[in-house]
Length: 161
Image 1 (cartoon, rainbow, N blue to C red):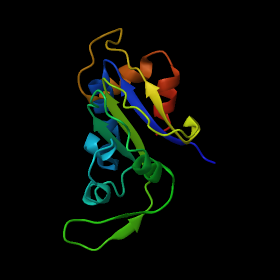
Image 2: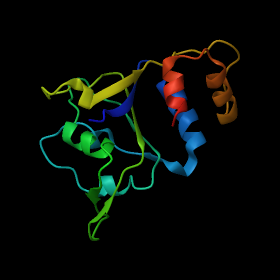
Image 3: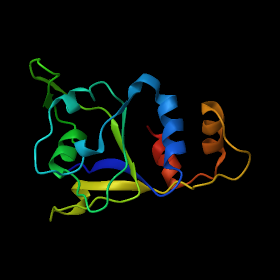
């Protein structure tokens, strides 16, 4: 079975890192509310999923302490199978998600599942709060600062987007 992967950003430096990546992605980037990917007592409206169609990178920000992942939804979105969605007052349609999921926050939501963690495992990245060298202003300079930092596993992983 294929491992479902998504990326989590924890700690300092998240906003600068996300701003640089999303600026480079342009129209291929979509933002989703964090509630789309965390468990709640009620179902979310399918318009949230419809808005992600066509994206190559989806980001969600600010995880809350004590929350859990919506495992079923994340498995469906990262599993490569078609999912049903619809826009407001329109018919349902199916699409196959083709995006990498990047979730940023200070707290790591838990997993409730007793399954082996190989089926759903966030890949954590801990960006440095401060990069050495000149201050990074503007998108082009931020990307240059990120690419000139020492190659770490996290940067190689994000570079594959």
